[in-house]
Length: 130
Image (cartoon, rainbow, N blue to C red; front, side, top):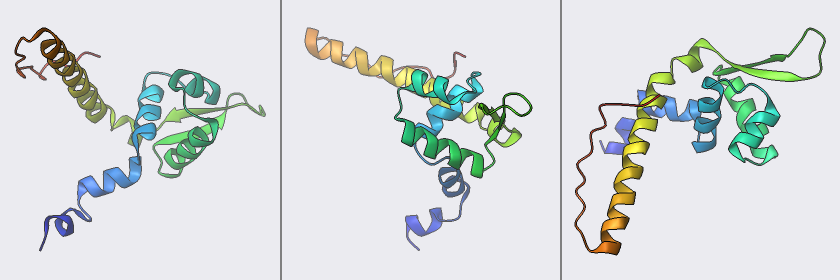
C-alpha cells in the first residue's frame, strides 16, 4: 500500500476536506478573532467577494460557522464560530506560531545572504503569541 492510500480517510484527509484552502483558514482565524460581518471579512482579508461568499458558504455547510440575522427580522447577516470551529483554535494557533517563526527565519536568511553572514535555523516554536 502506498503512502497516499494510507492518507485517504485519515484525520488529516477529513480536516483538509472540511477546512478547504488558505482563504478558509484565514476566514476562520478572523472569525475566531471576532470578525462577524461579510464586509469586515472582505476589507480585513482583501479577498474577492465571490471567493469570500463561496468560502463562507462552505464553512457554514461544514458546520464550522453559522450564519444568522444580526437582529430579528434584519436583512444583514453575521457569521459566528460554532463549537466545531472553536475546536480548531488550538491547531490554528500552532499554525500561526509556526508561521511567525518561519517568517523570522526567512527574514534572517535573506538578511544573511545580503550581508554575507550565516543564518542559523534555530528557532523555538514552543512559545506561541496570541
